[in-house]
Image (cartoon, rainbow over all chains, first blue to last red; front, side, top):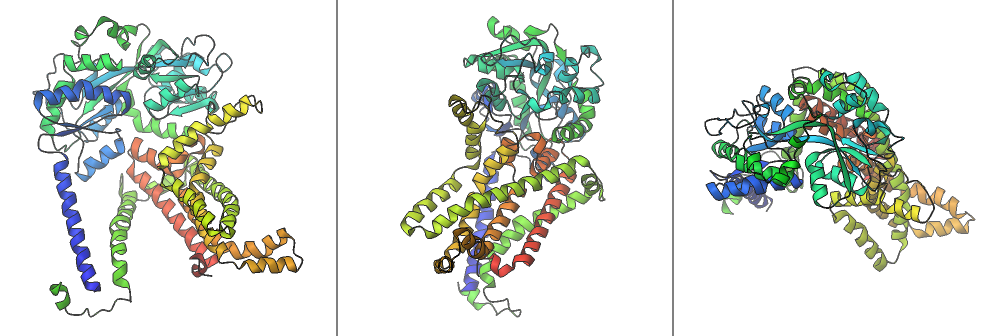
Length: 344
Length: 286
């Protein structure tokens, strides 16, 4: 009897294994592909502006996955089992990941390069969109108008919790330095000691946001009175009628880029998708839906005039470009200090 | 079936009942032992062979603080859980069984609800503009919102709530096995209710408290979602630090080493508990 059970078990195991293999094989058919991004309003706009028209035109199905997880991406490449074909990542990560051999080179015979903004195009990445960190606040919870980053550190004038991006990434360090009086053209190399000293002055009043939806919730509910947000998330809040204010003073630009993980199973489909996503039409549609800026220089011509006004491009006065190459170079060293400081 | 029955009998005799254990054993080896060994291997080979990951973890003040926090949170959660669970378990043990099964149903039902949903619900309740603070302020009891979230208070509240069933269930088993006559006898001999509790009920229920407490403590040590959402960065726990090492720093070696240290400490605690309380009593058989 026991032997029979063992035999049955062995068969069950074998069937399960077979079933899993079959599932894995059908999960992404020859010409289908998987796109991974950060979820929320951003990925919705990417689906509508890029994936749906792309599928209609090419017949290639695009499955959505997410959120982007750098640990998962590395694990996939390391284990040789890559389920993601195109991934939306932060640009400093893309530069570092290309150096570490985690990315496929972009096939620029399939992806037209001529009109792409060279600031956001590398051998291993094409731009997804670029965005600004802006100062946003809940109008109901704040009296007066915060004018710039220094006000984030002024607990007397603007009491209440302030919210910053939780992960080690370009942005918060620069904000602290600007607030402390460092001129925009003297930001790099970053003076970490000075930045952390400045951040220490408001540390117990900081609530960290780990994702875009969280940042929206914190500001909209008034849980945090003011914060550093992605401009697209503020744009979405305004569209929903939330009572938020925004200051573009010294807005900090950074970019997301699209990459293809090394060993991606549907590389050809991925390159075709990149071509569609970075095309003037794809970029124009996405920018209109999200409030993030297009990385194709011809895209703005295809957008309605009032949509162009909502973009970071409309606020180039005092705009500061975060230095992605500096961050890619010093990513680990800054991150180690960042997390040690946070845990203190 | 004829194929199996014709096989020659095995020369090595497994202990009785071993075949029944086989499915569970295969699962544990495949999905636990093998990955743990792979983890151990990564922790001493990445980025280069050697013990530098362990040296970094044990020699750094930040990591020491995170380890300390992890044990602090797990201890506080365990103590509070025991204090809350004990009266509930005692009520359940002496209640008429029809009523008790309804209460049990409520407790079990909470375990079936998605963990993330329950944690977000606590966020809505606890935040500065949340239900609790708004109510207290409207009632005029406080005039500044209480800091109930993004700190140790928030983590403790959220985790105790999640851990309660794991404490109540073993405790009810132990308490039900206690003969209520012993308490009546104590009262007849002139013991006050408190004396009866301290000298009769508490000692007799210790095995259940120990079993439940250990389970809660060990589960709390590795908890991720609730501390990440309800806690602040200054009381970060080990699981969140491991997530940072792996997701943000891509430092799998360091993350694996931290995970392995946590595993070893947990197993050592378990072994210690076994020695102190005894394996037989731990499993509920008194």
